[in-house]
Every structure is written in C-alpha cells, then in structure tokens.
Length: 215
Image 1 (cartoon, one colour):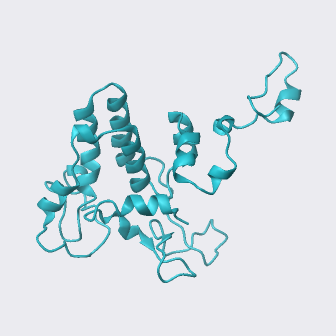
Image 2: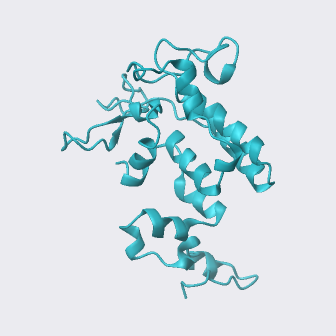
Image 3: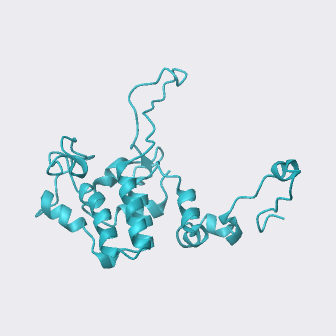
C-alpha cells in the first residue's frame, strides 16, 4: 500500500508517467494506493503453482545507478553533475507510449526499447520534447530531500527504503516529517536496530555493547 507521501511525490509533476504504475486499492474507487509495477501474468513453477503471479526480481536497475551517482555528486558539491544524473531519469519519466527516448530507447542506449509505461496522450500543448524539458531540474534544485524524493518516485516497491534512510542518517528526521503514524512512536535511537541478546551472550571472547537506547 503506497503512503500518502509517495502519492504526493508522484503528483508533483504533471508530466511524470510513473504515476501510471498505480491502481485503485481493492476497497476504494478513489485512492490510488496499489501498484501494478511488477504484476506478472503467469504463475511460476517454483511458486507452488499458486494462482498468484510473479515476475523476476530486479537485482540492479540502471536508474538506481544514476541515483547513486547523483547522490555522490551532490555530496562532492558537484550540483550540475548531480542535476544531469537526475535529469536522465526524469526525461525518461516524461516518455509516453509511441514516443521512444531518442536516440535509442531508455536512457539513450542504442537498440534499447522505449521505456514507457502508460498510453495517455500528452497534455494539450505538450509533446515528447516539451514534456521532457518540463521535467528537467537545474543545479540549484538539487538537495538531499530532492534525491530522496526522486528515489521514491523511481523505486516504489523495489527499494529497501529504511536502509536508504539509515545509510543517509535521516531515518528519524524523515519519519517525523512524512510518516505521521510512525512519528508517534519512533525515537532517535531507532536509527539502529537492537543487537539480539543471543548474539551478545554467545560472544564469549569480548563484550558486545548493546546499541544505545535498548538497554
């Protein structure tokens, strides 16, 4: 179930086709909280031959490589480089069916198929070029928040979001800002998990200190 935070991110740009991965909740005709991003059409032999469907898990995605590169550039103070990396993803996200990303599909790779997800026509007055231009950002737009927003738009139901927020040191801050449910109970020390007592007790060669807040 997609959070309101994620749905708000998708709706920030009217030209962003990534909202096309969303569908209505089973119990709602108005809330677009379910995702069809990786809905399969054939039950797998190894899936107990169940009626549920599955598709291959994405181990690595080229778009995440661009996102990591953008984060690295941002932390090095290379804002234009970071914006360029993000714009590769954002231009692709403006593509609609029948409008392949020139000169050769997704991310401009020769011979790659068009990376489009929805068949809606462009808004009046827009075409592929103007939609892509509208999605581009400038160096001054790049912030850590923006990179995290872009990760959420691009990697819904793929990203291990908690790990990303912990790695960036912003878990508590982001939950307090964007997750009103978890904000009621989270504490700053929840940035780290507690070390299991069995692990501490079984380490007889040295004392393992419990992470702060869990003693």
